[in-house]
Image (cartoon, rainbow, N blue to C red):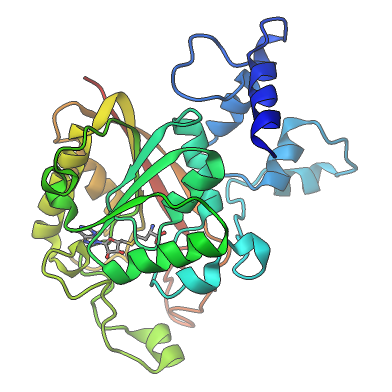
Length: 326
Ligand SMILES: C[S@@+](CC[C@H](N)C(=O)[O-])C[C@H]1O[C@@H](n2cnc3c(N)ncnc32)[C@H](O)[C@@H]1O
């Protein structure tokens, strides 16, 4: 859609004569969603485009009650293409161990910001967030320890003919130094941190059998990489990056953090999302507001534990939502 037709579209969404659910409320300082779009965005499960159309009731269909119930399942697939034009240069971004689909980040950005809003990702990797900013007409700023990942972001962005967003190489726990004299004021912090020493642990079980490789695969070898830290240091480091990010976040701006749980052990439940919430709510002025769940349908199912014990395939990630209150 061209710039001018987009303007016409957003102007028509403002039109006071439209029913409330079809227009953007004049009190809405957060985003450009109509009343109806807002309601569907509150679903704690991220819906695919196809399913959300179905659920809006705009599509008349022939589903039996049973089929309908299947469509309403709380675990709805979000299978993003990893090849072809809708993969958003996945062939370049896949050189990173865990790139996020730009389409998914775009949905979050469109809920938590308005057009031309500013988004910070302090653990930006190969830039899923930044590509999403380009797609959604927002300004993105990303930080990563690794120059290689930032270069891959630039290659992906260039191959898509997107305008490059701003990136900085450095340790996100020193944002004040990285941004130097810049007076950034972000509307949203959206990020996908590395989780403890999760990736640098030796691979075991199915994965080792499958790849034949048990060597650790950290994001970087840098000491400041949160992915290389033990649990206690990790939570302190994560808190300090979020505190720093909040220095550049507007009041009532949201902090949205991805998180995946680990398998439980005898020592700990490993519901990492609960521990992340407990750690981050210690930050003054940051309040936990809820979560969404992303069901990553592109993951493979493995018969872990077969035929002896239940071992979950963790196909979903938590999207933890916080707000800077003052
Ligand atoms: C899970 S990945 C983010 C992937 C990203 N969402 C994407 O789409 O590519 C986490 C990233 O954090 C970076 N990182 C780890 N510790 C960091 C730190 N202290 N400062 C900045 N970046 C860091 C790693 O290099 C890694 O690329």
